[in-house]
Image 1: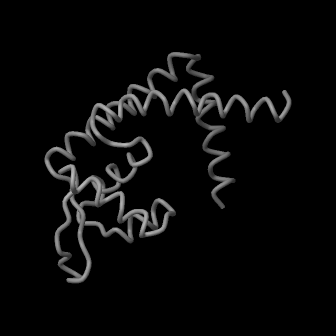
Image 2 (image 1 turned 30 degrees about the vertical axis):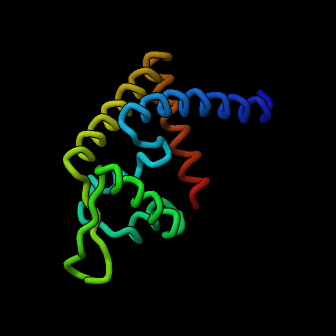
Amino acid sequence: MALQETGRKISHLYQLFMQEYADFGETISVNVIDYNVFLSIQENPGCSQQFLADKRHVQRSLLTRIIKKYVALGLIERRSSDRNKSAYALYLTKSGQEATQKIRNNILDLNQKIANQCSAEQYQQLNEALDTIIRNWDR
């Protein structure tokens, strides 16, 4: 298989993936690119914007705009940090928790959809190959 084919296939799969998530994201008012923010806040309630920026490898100013958007939508709330009064601790509102649970359910559904497209052995091999690529790329 030519390397060009692999890149084209990954690009096509990415487009399918993003379209599926984008359609779903509209139903919960969360952009697909921002899902990780919600998952990270749920896993680390009271975290700082700097923590999220570091985790997502983005500038804090970009994250500030993202957080501001979802605060206005009532999905995330900022509270004064107990440790640093000039910083904010981030929490999901009840609506944010519900949206995050829907995100998690959608991720499980998508994983099942992928698993249904191939044998159990192929699915395992796919995950192992992806783990290897991510681990080596992310160095």
